[in-house]
Image (tube, rainbow, N blue to C red; front, side, top):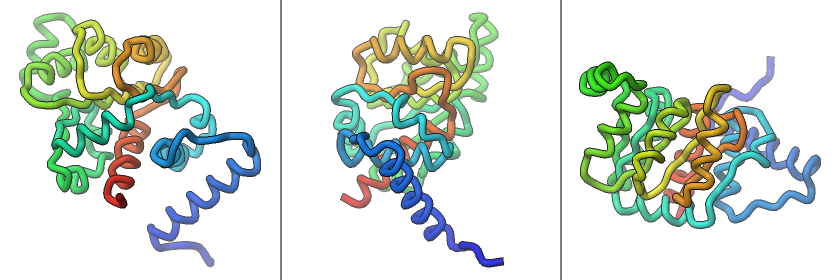
Length: 209
């Protein structure tokens, strides 16, 4: 059997196919800048779903705010270990940044039980107690996103793409209306893999700059 085996060539060819499909099926579509294009195409590459052309929402200043925050050495807080594992932490460290997930932290487990809330909510509470510049990356837990918003927190940026049927769409619409620098997935779709893909797309573009 003859097939591509080198990871870099497979990825390169995948992105070429994505670009060809967009050009053929959505010739009128225009990306709002090279970084937004890189993010949307990487999410499509991750999911094989072209609906992301229409459902990934960007606040006007979010890319600039995210980039500046990463250059200053911020901390990313994820709602799942899956999102944490999917982010390129080696490249993140090159910019002086770190990434944390408190979902299994004993303090979070205890706090969630005491307060009668989800561990995702308790993890947000713990993250907000920490010093330093923060970016929140949510791919799975609507309750985490709701918690962040109800706390009135002002992180540098939020990537809010929780997936699901209970509260997911509503939490992301609340993020869109919050005025925070944010990237959100309109509707039910999302996921930790999508959240990580968005972060990685920006990191790769920053490395190339």
